[in-house]
Length: 157
Image 1 (tube, rainbow, N blue to C red):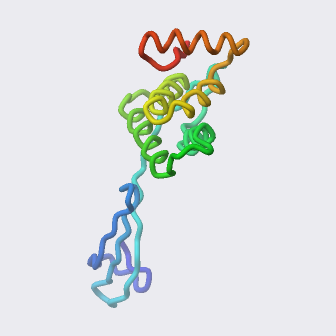
Image 2: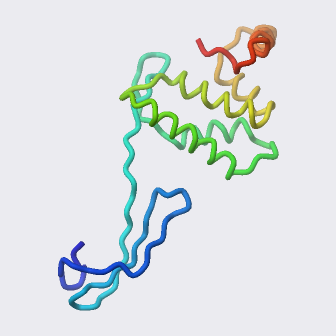
Image 3: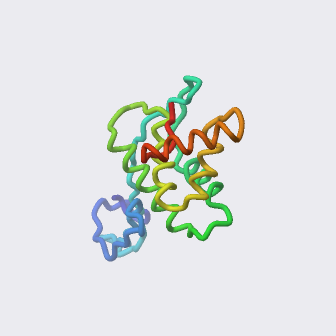
């Protein structure tokens, strides 16, 4: 790292602070030549797979989309933002662990529904009713009862 004041290539690290989610590291440095102090940030770069939508389009993976969908399902429920961020973190880790360059959106939807089912039944039903398309209310109830009998979240295909 070159000093921003004198361009000397060597410095020493005075302090290191890691963001709570571990994605950003902030370092306070001091130039060994001019003793000027400056701060740097290191950011973990992760390459998420492309998402294959139901209609075949490919989109970039967006963590924020997952959080927004979960927040909408959990609206007016006794669930804190920290819990929702933990769910998003788990889903993101699972998607990275798949190791594929492309993953179907249904995989992400399934993971969200699994998380919501364990968190809050109302949020789970809200998400399922928006995520899936149903002919009518009876179709929705039948599918829920069928999947409850199998002990799993709603079937996605």
